[in-house]
Image (tube, rainbow, N blue to C red; front, side, top):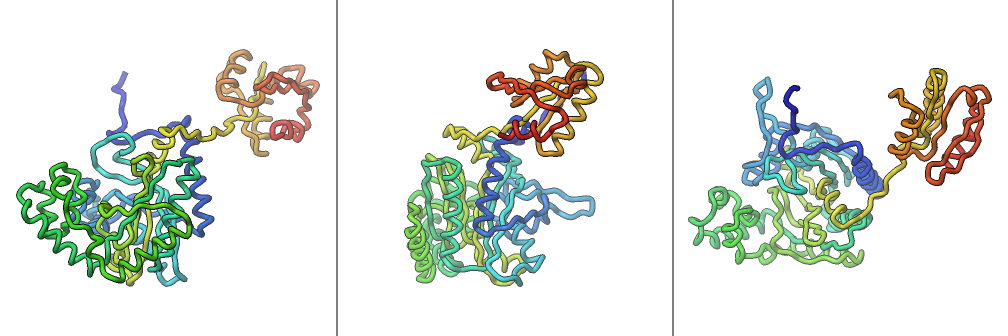
Length: 418
């Protein structure tokens, strides 16, 4: 026997037995998105590497440590997308969507790839739901994005949520803050990790996001961004709080939220469930311009689907299991099998989930199989049933038998759907 192949580390199969959970989550998010007037976008699985170095930021962990980057046969550097925002912005610019009436609202479900330490709820290939709103600088749209995220998580049955918000200011006030951070970290420069030493000059705020314990300890008493934001950014943050208050959305100001990507400005937020982050995002008002588009503000968030499903399981939230099979048509003899196949396909065309035997099982084994796949009803076609066109249809939950006419499929369908 040949060696059994294994999936790559950091990946996971979605098995047919689990697919309904993913469908449930995706369907609910699609429905909520539609209610907010958000339409779907799909972008390529890989992009030019420069999109992420320019958009996500050269000093981020994502770019420095985690991207899957390679040269294609034409010698071009391409990267499997590590997140969804930069590709959405690239599509927005390339397709001149900025010329449309604003705001532009889009959502996506996408695979994303990051080479990082594998742990529960964190894979190297993961799946993300994200939304991106382009064109509005108003705090009301920040509040709308946050309210959508909170509402979605609550509708999934998560009740122990906490919303943390912060403002990272604009480039003007951020410069003053970066100067203050440099002054603060200067005394402990030699004790920083090598990555943070490289960040010291280019982007000292990234040091606050370091995963190394020694850097976290050094940064524990660092200056806070909210003490340095300008009047305009402060007013925007106060407006956001007013909108959240009017929607009765509870929040906490967390001045240590900096998020892991360089493009964020002003509003940033995270939503946690029992202390575990399940959703995060913020405003990125300069990214469209930095990637070659017009000056235009934007905001969005990302929600990891593996993380969400893990949290739902941990919280014992039961995802409703759909009916996978309405009717199993068993058969005896060659004519029985041919007609079972015929009726199964006719019923499928009329919207009934129907199965028949493809393994040449005995009648007893066919009924065991029908039970195993959770069929709601069963019937068996033999010589007598085909001759009289009358057959006993059995409800599997209570064993009740109902006589039906094979020439009257409407009758069979009405019993199933009743």
